[in-house]
Amino acid sequence: MVPAESNTSAESDSLQSHSYRITVDDGRESFFALSIEDASSEEAWLMSDTVVALENMR
Image (cartoon, rainbow, N blue to C red; front, side, top):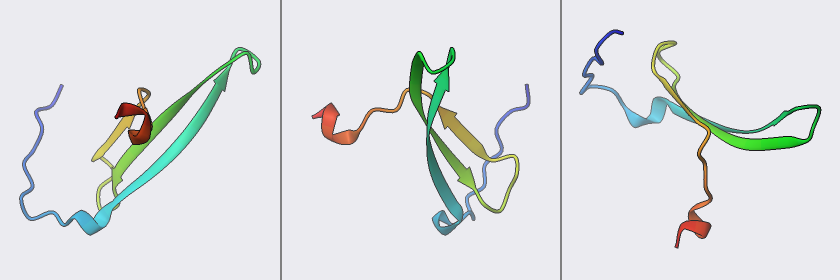
């Protein structure tokens, strides 16, 4: 494991997000995932499979 590097000069304009609905077991089960990526770096990304709509959290 490599420690995270601080990049205080990064601009938030380079962040991109994508949502996915992933289906497994021949369509019997599915879940949602969210990917947040820094467009300027292939090594800076986050993928989460615990996505909940903000409206449902209130």
